[in-house]
Length: 282
Image (cartoon, rainbow, N blue to C red):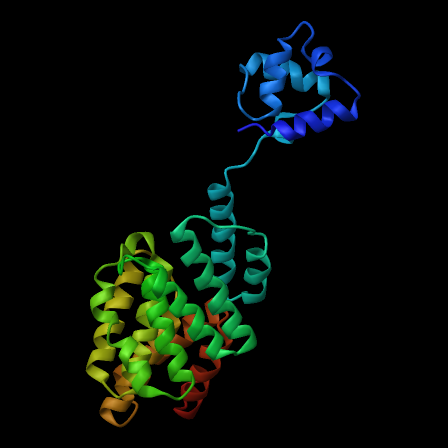
């Protein structure tokens, strides 16, 4: 779509009348229609008009708002996935208006979660996630499912286990609705949070089942995402089950340490290294 206002402003800036601009190119009526954004002339005529006004096509082309917003959201996604939450929030500020419902939910999820971890304001986060759920008309929407999971996480951080459980217990059914191949990071993040929930409430068999699914999925897609976290939780869960560090638990602990070192995950690396040193392995 052509921005007729930009053409009109440039014409007036150059003190050219519509009749003068149209001379030997087109009619004055075509120029008038173009400036009102009602009609776009042929590409040949448009090129001559722009040349006379010393404008490029980029100067007058109106970007598709939905496409532009999606590009911004994709950038914020990448920053979020790298845990650069402040960068993600700065990127999201570039969005001025969102009409598309899915994009509204996407935006609200990123902004709510990034803000929660930066400012540690959990009540505001709960409000944000509930906004997503109120807007959602499809419980298979990835951002609806993420909002449910993050409500579980948020209530857990707030020390309200019953409320946390209400949301986490919905996840096993909801996970089946996800197009996993299109949402690799988000699916693994959901499995990571669900496995930690089961570990926290000492449902070790369920925890290991989720971890097995997560590790197999990550291997299928050749991604190291969350793998050090999965291996570390697997190791500590086996230890809890058996009451000691057995051979299997230590094997997973070494894998966790190796991947954490590779991924530069300082938190998991520090925890794994501490356990390995106590066992005399490092």
